[in-house]
Length: 175
Image 1 (tube, one colour):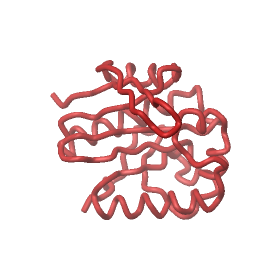
Image 2 (cartoon, helix red, strand yellow):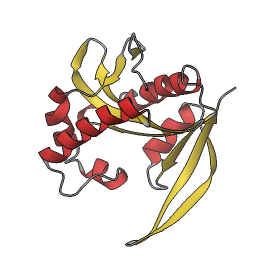
Image 3 (spheres, helix red, strand yellow):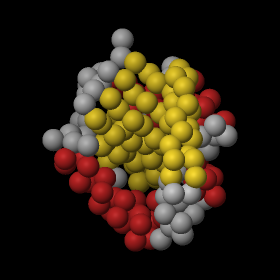
Image 4 (cartoon, one colour):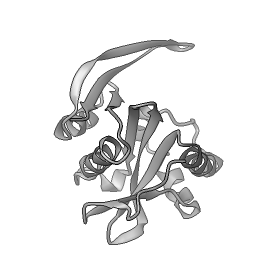
């Protein structure tokens, strides 16, 4: 069983905590954003039921140890959700992803969250590597990855029913 860190991961500006039922409306609102829909594989249209299902799924994934999903919240107000970050776990490898609400962008929130998550994943969880798959046209996310010590490792193209889906792979190894 995977357990949320206690105390929660925090740098004094943001805190990472598991999702709660009270986060559903913020998740729903955030996933209406065209930028999140462009770069994150969320259902379209995104419905409130999708947000409810997401929160339930994150709770199951914590319990079965397959993924640690966190709400990124204001450290002074843990009810204010600023975004989401997670790490899916397979053996000693983690695969992370994140999104930030439109109102919280441009404040370094993603960088802070990725630093916290990466330190925890490579330290406390003992993972050997954390991967990020970033769309080539997602300049903001590439800058976040680089600011957090991730290095470009190559490109992964996957054939899907709608054509090729590609992403740049960035990695951060345990030291």
